[in-house]
Amino acid sequence: MKLHKITLPACAFLVAYAGLMVAPMKAIAQGVANGMVIATPPFSLTDEVLKSNTKGLDVEALITSALSKSPPTKSEYETNSDFEERLRKFSETAFSGKVGPNKKVAVIHPVSALPALWRGGNATAEVRYNAETEVMSVELDSWLLCGLPLKRNISPKRKYTAANGFGNKVEVIQADETETCLDLDDGGETKINDLVLSFKVPKKDAASVKKSLGVVIIGRLAPPFAKSERQHERPTMESPVEINKLVRSLVIKPDDVWLINSATGTVLAKHKTPFLNSEPILAEARKCNHPRYHKSELPNFNLMVELEFSIDASGAISSGSVKKSTGIVDLDDRALKAISKCKFKPGMRDGNPVDGVAIVKFHFSDYYAGY
Image (tube, rainbow, N blue to C red):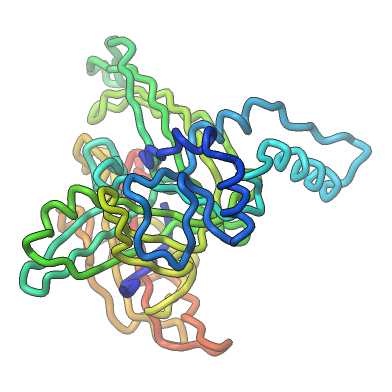
């Protein structure tokens, strides 16, 4: 199995956990002692078959537990570093025993249950099967600010009539939205990347395997462990929806990502540290300006274009193309022109700059639009 690509940034891993809190402590302790991953039941990184319907951490339960305690506030008599250390110690008290910050844990979720990145937009995960080669691939596409989408609920509250500055009226739907997220952290900086995992599966088994695909994120909890943020999205004439959003995230530093057949427990694909640079060598985009456009050019939902570029060892663009189109040629062209003014840091191998690949996404939404 090969990691095809990792890109620049982006929550429903509805994470199964029900049996973890009641699992025998002896079995859990033995699993940890043997360097096994905490799940129900525990498993080893060398396993090729897990127990059928293996359960991972309950992200929602851990977030609720961590956020139930009020964090300390900074005193005028302590330095920033002193306060950060006190905050770290406080955060660690939210987790203890079998799910402590130093224990390797697993989050397991059905691929089919991952939500769209945008309401009515791109899927978080795309599963494709090539009958000619008998290869199935799963691409995880994670852009949202919360990290990797786990669970999303939208509850409409009421309708009201609003008018813009020109007196044009529109009926607005007001709704509450809650997101549960897995914030994938590497060395203190969140890096959410696209990745593609592929594996062979006979044609006769492909349909059933696709329905039972599960993704497994393996790693350790990372400070601040849990986060909560409220956001407000204003309605527009093109998208007359007012959203009051609550985003709750569990922070984890990933070491491995697996694909499994949840029904049988068979491990279909593994990759070590897929959120760090791997093949191909990645160049880093810097000082990129967003394409210019107006709200009136957008439909009633957000759009995204994905561009792929070959970057030479000097950081110059040698070639480029549209990998995923917005569906609007003019917006794609403007994204390509914006990239032409981008500065890139070349990929590195053994401390030396080398030719590499950069994949850049631009999201066309009200947030970035001109007026």
